[in-house]
Image: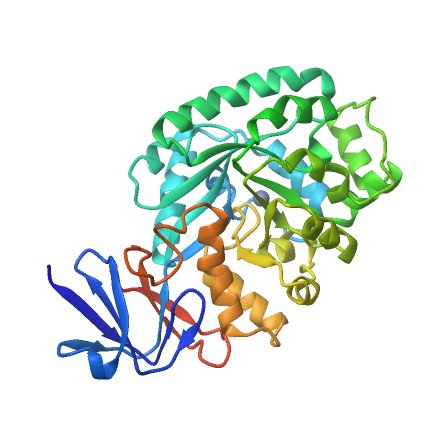
Length: 389
Ligand SMILES: [Zn+2]
């Protein structure tokens, strides 16, 4: 087996930044062999300019919505965004499939090697069978009207079976959001969470906390417009996360997505729970929909595990983890490049249960090798990525 040796301006391992003395050694297939000092690397070292980094993990995407790129106006707020998505679901299958294929190409080009993908149908299966990227498939369930809980569950179990027989161990059932799952549906779903990786959209708008605290607010407008009735809903007087988190506690890992209006008391609750949790940031989608950004300083101060997601092309101009990092570093220059790159690699791999293969330059893994430019002091607006392996 022949080896490849790479030396660059710096090497980010997935967890730490090494200086220019480091040499990354892989086999021809891209399996990591070791990282050694220049003095021990021997001959035939390829010298590159830029930062070597493991492949990016996109922890939150909706590949099946790729055909909605550019269809939904920006900055409408979440409720009007949801109304638009629901109204625009009816496209011909060929158009949806072509958009899925193009979006996956875009992710490959952007250095993404694995995706946590939300699935409400089976339209992404033909593309995923090509196995160009690794996926965890989250079969998403929603239903605010309790009388349809059983019907929704049965339909989703059909999707679950379709994905699970092709991608065993990388498919799980997940609730959409606290404001779209009735108590009856939580009861139906809960047995499927045990020891699984589960995701949920969390605190994406202020209206979500408001609904659970007072029973009022913009979501009541959504339910009226969609003619959805949930007579059994009772406001808890608490934020949405503490109102529903107990349903998720048997999961192996919970991936909370967005967290734009997460507060210290919510984080305290998570930290007091034995369940492993990561917080997924999708800043470009937050800007697109709500013109807001998550409370990064609060999350960092609490030392929670951060991961990065692109959300869908319905609420983003591209599917690029690097573009999300640029936005974060632009708005939060106090963050270190290492913290951001770790969220985009190692932490994401753990959140999707793929850390044995992906996320860091450790012997035996095959994480993909990226070369990043213009990220040394800051992940700047002109940063770009090339796939080396
Ligand atoms: Zn989403």
